[in-house]
Image (cartoon, rainbow, N blue to C red; front, side, top):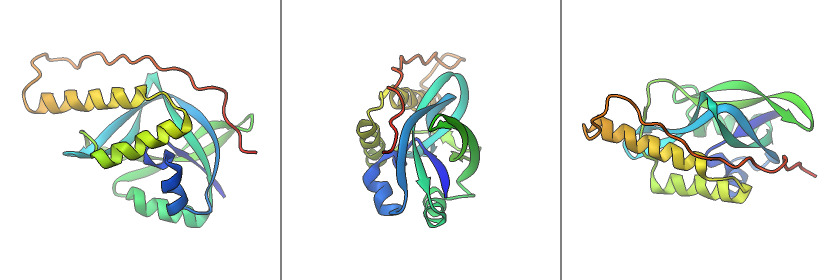
Length: 174
């Protein structure tokens, strides 16, 4: 058994139930000091998190079995596309380590496919998360594309300020 932190398409319960039938949804939480971004290739970007002290990312904590982790490894393209890191998260009132997939370096900000974005949005809605981190990530991708295409004339990245509501107290598994 291992704890797994989901922040993108694996927030979507239907998708996780199909992919990892023995995984159990435990609680919602958030990662302070991280921001959500979409990175990858043109119109085929995927969610990742990056350190940013000014931001936080809502997450869903799962309890997974070794066979679930193997399936997630294949889905996430580990170790080529994503790497695994262990982060501390409060679980049941105690700090515990949980595994998270973070995209490897070298992938640029870009837009996700409509289908992928819809899957992530469904997960956000289902978990009751504020969509502000997704909106900010999309704005950042739009800016990056405009800059690559020579449509952004300023030399500095714009300020991306999105007000986020803090989620309610973590929802615990009963």
